[in-house]
Length: 299
Image 1 (cartoon, rainbow, N blue to C red):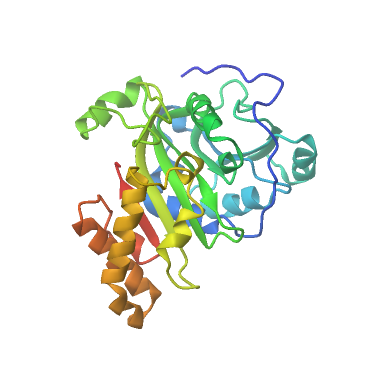
Image 2: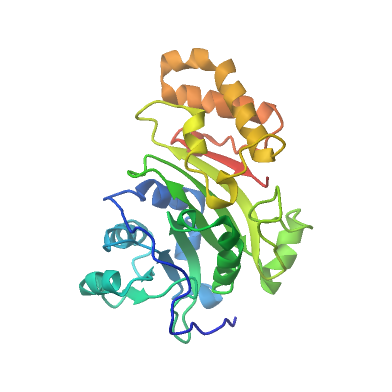
């Protein structure tokens, strides 16, 4: 696998960098639930490959918290925190070790010769860009991820209690035949309802849009509209599929409101099941829904 060597100047722009302890805990827990094998693979180039925390913020806490969680299943996992501001990297460097790295970089990831990436988490990063910048950034990141690797890209509220994210899989020459065997003859885009991202045989295959809530403050479908990823946030308008989706989910929540008596979790699960009955491809596995994750697959 080859990729363009990162230039000395990071590609991108500084973000606010605000974060909070355990803000991305539910994101990490989702990954561990969704595909734990991705973190433990040692076949081929996956041996020694990295998890990349892109845009970790003004301090290293989210990267270090992820290291603790992910190394419970893979003690040898290499982790790279990437930030575009030199000062943030300098603050994080005292926490680096032989498996944990912090480097200056942007969408041109600062990888060294022989390094590879199995997973990228880019949270609360692209939301701060213009929509026109979304597709080029994602396309650039694709070149660094191993075939069959993942990127989870999305937005959360300040404390991470609710978030929404794109889950995309890297499809290259190695994985293309497998993707076709699964029914992906025509590869999806990050925004399958438009031309936000052109996908080629060596780019991303859209896999799911994930909605996450800890349900501690109840359940309200409209809250998810405020934290949609950048490729969707401006498209919740009539005649757009994401608008139709939310209208259907709101209707499903209304139809199942009687379950609210038994708690927000029961209502959330029932609304997802009602939404699936309307023709949306919702993953109805209890291991996800019972923990506040609703997965809309293959949009």
